[in-house]
Image (cartoon, rainbow, N blue to C red):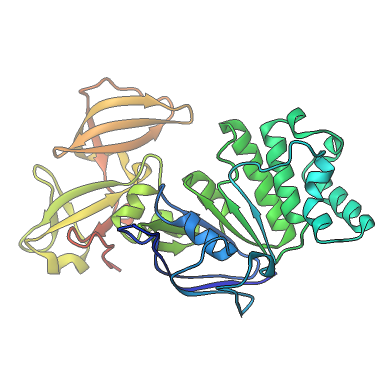
Length: 355
């Protein structure tokens, strides 16, 4: 195992007007499960490919275990990679697919057999070792691809959206299997996804990316509860964070939303007479008392009920208990608890310190 350090990595593709990687610096600790999360085109796969040696940065450094591998051949980095496509050989049995890298490396036949059986047991593939990929389900083929990667005893395991080709139910079950597996192996893992549920459930830390930069990096609960800017709050969460625009009153004590008001932290008194943005998660809004909102849409989701309502002329999403009932147009009473509110500068969209 080894840690991974990225120093000021820059990558611009020919003819591109935007950097795919814009001076990205990131440290992934030895044995850590790091998730790179972001929308399509944000640069997360480019970053992964530069770590793997499949792309060469314009500038910056990639260090693995303290060794500079920025321009090293992929084979000299001691990495394993699982791609979005299964990339299994259709003309080879499962056992041969899993052991392919070992055989190419010239490992003894007995070692290959032992490691193939070990990986097959870990990933519940033992009954399928003599089958060809065409006889496997999508989830089984993806497990073959993961098994082929882990038998190589690599320092770092890279995964590029490995679950995106699976249906929702398979993704759910395989996600749990993958987290358990990586935890047992103790391997340093860097995982790329656009799926926020995967990111929150899998990662020790999550690096949220936007336009070639890391907008925020931290433990999943921290990134979710305290988004560093409006982009992170608006991207992470389903539904995402609500944002309300208001003006801090002249005395600096309240936020005027235009028809409704609420207290603001003392730290925002410097914004007296100026606009600020209030961010709050749908589950952070409490029903039963406080401000008046008008219900627009009610969506039963099984374990909860999602409400769309208008508060002081601004639309908000509210997570209500399962079984909540009301008709569109009904008046709701809602509270915005202070400990659930996050405050943002409308110009920079950055989180304001209020503690």
